Figure: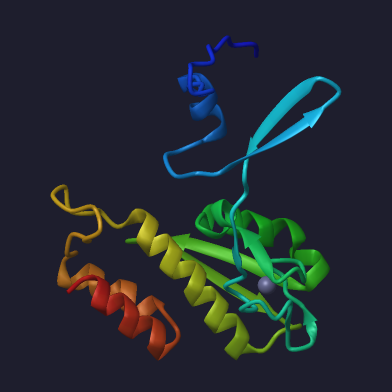
Length: 177
Ligand SMILES: [Zn+2]
């Protein structure tokens, strides 16, 4: 793709809308310029966040973390996308002896099983992924996008029941208050 832009008096250019859409560049994002052989390349800086599964420790129970592959960090976009996380586990599961299943009732519910990691570790990680799913699929207030719409008692009950740890249950209950 070749798109023209004009440099203004203050050395500014407007990044074409098509480029922003394609590369998902939003206000506040940082970009990095690389100059090489007369070409100027610029890329959106990939934001990295601490891996939610191993909490940056790179491993789980002395085995490589199966979410970050032992790196300790994740690309922010991946970390925020439960569907990408689930497909990552499905694709690399054989290597880590881990299986991911999901069911859909009121919600997409994820279920991890493994002979390699303890139930305690799996429950924690499963809840972290499940929270991302709840966050992604719960309708938000039109007035204030940071506030969730309250689901019916029955649905909230099934959302909470599906979580494994008390911490996750408590956190999610607070979201819908
Ligand atoms: Zn990790």
